[in-house]
Image 1 (cartoon, rainbow, N blue to C red):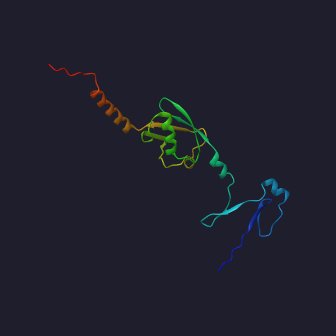
Image 2: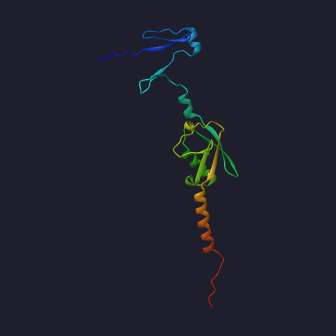
Image 3: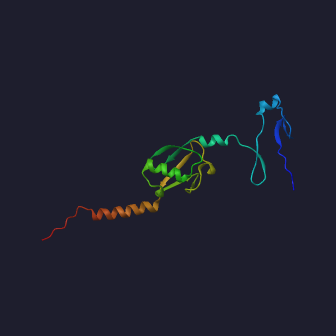
Length: 157
């Protein structure tokens, strides 16, 4: 059986020193940020714990969403998905999420992709297009409605 001991790591000048009973932090260490917090990842890798990860979830980014004729400024969390962005755009533009196609950096993005994973930053531009297949279906159905609902009257003699 293997015994594992918990070790604390502290920043000391320019190198890391492993110490199980280190209690004092020098003045130079407090200037540099004090104690470094470490975490053990599931794969067994020891990495420095991120402190800014908590703040990223609360931040909000503003996206410029451009259509052919309009530009909208949408505020959203960076951890949201493109599907959630489509829902917000449905309220703003009137297009259903199924009818929308979003392009970022020249590529169409799927609903399940997250903004921060693709690299979307604050004040980035996203292009919104109406799906051409659905647009054709709308025109075809609206064309039939015009024929049926036209102003022609049947005259019986």
